[in-house]
Image (cartoon, rainbow, N blue to C red):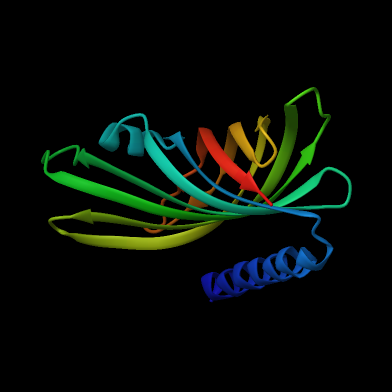
Length: 191
């Protein structure tokens, strides 16, 4: 009963945020699309014993500027890692698809540099595959971040970001801390 109500609440909040996010497209002044690659270090100690300290994460994003220096952003990413079960040493795989809705505030423009801070909501769908079976689940979290965009001419830009993520899941009545730190570099095109 508790998990059903919690699931309904998570879905309702995600739907409301998505409605506000995409509804504000009417006010958009500038759009951007791009991609990034980064390193994602999952905070969970059991995960680190099984898979190691982290792996590459690939991301595509869409964003638009509303108001004064506020960018609303949608992202979808892919993370995959391979490891060994701690006792049997059998191979095991973990994959995760984070979907992120967030906002960034551009602090100042200095020549071609635009440092920013940001925050947002994250939805994580994940799957662990082993010989004995597969486990999949999802959870909702949040992030805070900082970074800097560097203009490369009129339309292209380079982006460097550092993000802290908080996302806990409980697939077996045991908390798995899927959050952690993500550092990424990306390129984008504004129009």
